[in-house]
Length: 149
Image (cartoon, rainbow, N blue to C red; front, side, top):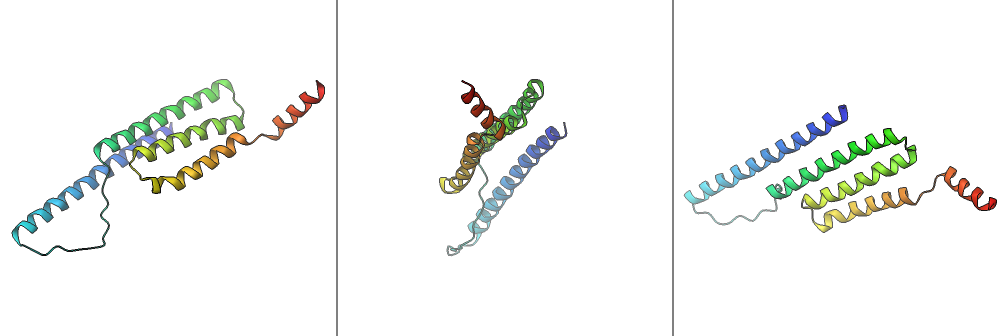
């Protein structure tokens, strides 16, 4: 229950920060438009990087992906408790879901290919390690079953 409340609070803070940032950028653009209309000036060239917030569509899609991921994780936790799944399989089950949801979030948040590529490489490496790794008990079980046949 605490985890659920944490994620809801995190989503609300993200929405508030997005709204505040969008309002700040809008206010500064309007203020610059008013001051530049009054006094003609030469164009200034600056190297400052102005952060541009996500568009409303990408922000809503990102929240939908995070909400869907939260519902999936809650459903998976319920399944793990009801079916008594082993700890190794539980880790694979939940972490692969987190990797997929994280990848979808990066895509819907509007990051460029150059920004996403290192994260995708890391997430793919983790997923490959988890799915390719055999536990010592399953390796010995498969060897015993082959020798008995």
